[in-house]
Amino acid sequence: WKLPVVFVCENNQYGMGTAKGRSSANTDYYTRGFYIPGIKVDGMSVLAVRQATAFAAEHARTGKGPFVMEMDTYRYHGHSMSDPGVTYRDREEVSGVRRARDPVEGLKQIILNNE
Image (cartoon, rainbow, N blue to C red):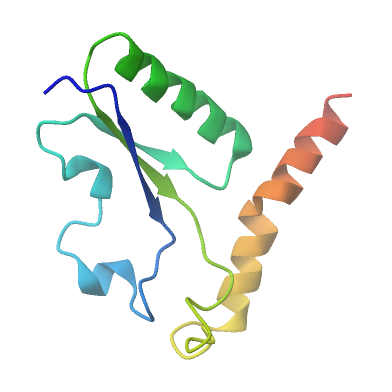
């Protein structure tokens, strides 16, 4: 029961056209392990992912057992070729998230502001 494993759940806010709140009674996926500790991570922040991954890996490597990480991300496009992603959300939502939380742009700003 003390396997050194890290489970990662990518939560991009939508299933195949269904918002997470409409498909799950408990949307805090990292708490679903009951006996496995877990954390929710801003999956849109490169530095938060790095820090959380180091923490989870250290937990597993030191014999404390498995760990769950829920990566809170956002899917800019549809789920697949059959899902254009425009019927259950509008362009303003997508562009708003991109402006506020884009991971590449966020890291670029950190690098440029900390030269």
